[in-house]
Length: 503
Ligand code: MN
Ligand code: ZN
Image (tube, rainbow, N blue to C red; front, side, top):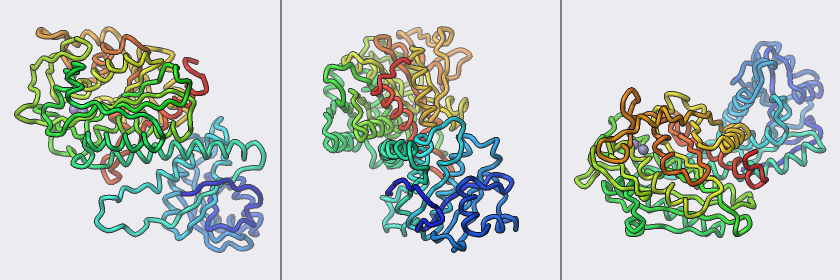
């Protein structure tokens, strides 16, 4: 997909389709008013017939409108002007792309970034529009036996902006949007790839590929290396699988060589059966998405490298399957983690924290400026926050603020959850230092005690944890990876590169 800016007269613009907004009730947006005036009020007279009221999510396609040089005009319902905010803007973009996909147009001019969206500037609106177009045209069809008929003809999208500062900001926004969208596509592709193909070996190969594309260093630690490091948590999970585990380390050095890095750690369980505490069969296929934290780390590094951010970033991905097997861990097993702390494994389905804890200890060797881990850790975070916000836990208020702000800028939002000592009380074992799940009134799947568990391995650096189990994938008819929270991470890295740490 090609993206560009368009300025100047809309009426004379030769393009396949011009997309303009209509508020309830039949109230034309500025560009729609321009087209209406140039066409002898063709738009107003169609609306007067009652074909589009302007409700959110509705569209109306007009062909060969008199006196306009474009082939089509797509009217997009925006809802009431006073209610028009970020989520309505994204709804309008998604409905526009959906409608464009049903047409034969190869080129479209989008006027929606002209709309007032709270206090958002032109750059924000263009970046979001670009990502929405990429999102709405994304398909995962590499495993179909026949190449599917192209779902749409759309090849080029121009964002119509006023000349001047908006155009300058627009160019930069397109560059940033393209990089973030590419990171999102990578994360979606990795997430959607099934567990028989997307194995730890596959992830390691894709990491090497990414490294050679961007010229950054990639190291893969094998089982023997993990044994030498004493990664008893990671190895405990891996022992149930026939697939060899891989600790993938990607190091992007865009900044000064001696700068302390930002470390991103992504949970890379390429398939989670639950182990001997096996999961129910229904929707178990969606457990291929249990490596989406890892996928988002790949995506964020890809985006950072495309943006050539002047920053030192390390991505660490512990990758393994969690399988039931004669050699698999059993409830009650006690293992020694790389930190030296012992863990009683009460629930083999709480495997994510067992692989993450060793990766988080390994991160210490980089003397990191900050560590952010991203993991599909608990179902309970999805019960709490749904698919809207990722759960954020942090031992550092400054880092938490930074990530919340990045999520807001990216519109890939997170919501902060507590890490209070009161919750730490739930992690008590009679046989080891602590168990891998909480007990007492706290459910085994509790997102807060999961974060408390991780906090015991992260005291040496500013740390945050994103529980993304509710946001990285969708079930149902739209089943698939969403590419979250690549945009959040990318904006976090942009902020770091601009020197906004802890602001
Ligand atoms: Mn699990
Ligand atoms: Zn898992």
